[in-house]
Length: 169
Image 1 (tube, one colour):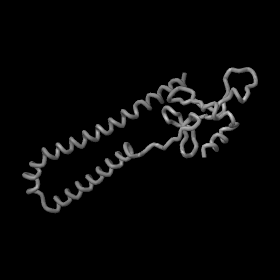
Image 2: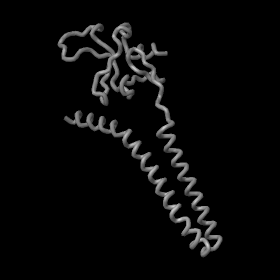
Image 3: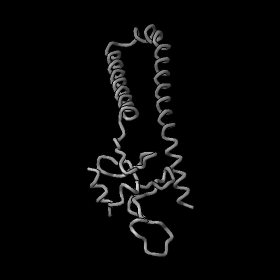
Image 4: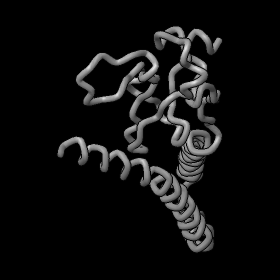
């Protein structure tokens, strides 16, 4: 019961991730538009009424603070753009029906998430000795809620996960 709740929560979070990313982009765009509109509306009032009444040192201080705040905002926007759009996911190689990263860690071929518990497994609920021919390299991908197995023909001669990983070099 607890596992199914955890699985559904993981699937929900995975589904909401793109929505959250687009919401963040929309909110930043709306904030930029709002700030621009406020500046355009208040600029005539500032230039006409406020600037002539302020001493020069105060005006210089306001301009410096505004410049620093704009620079910080630009850095935050650049960092968000880098994180959201320019950071590339790791390149994965498809071999034996499983995707592998550069460190030879197995990934699901469908959702490209790391597979946990990848190993040589046999059929379950068998009350007899299992032969190597009945076993296969596999793991369960929890976000996809399915078993991911390596290609049986191309991995039949491997006796351990390490041998399989060494063949990827």
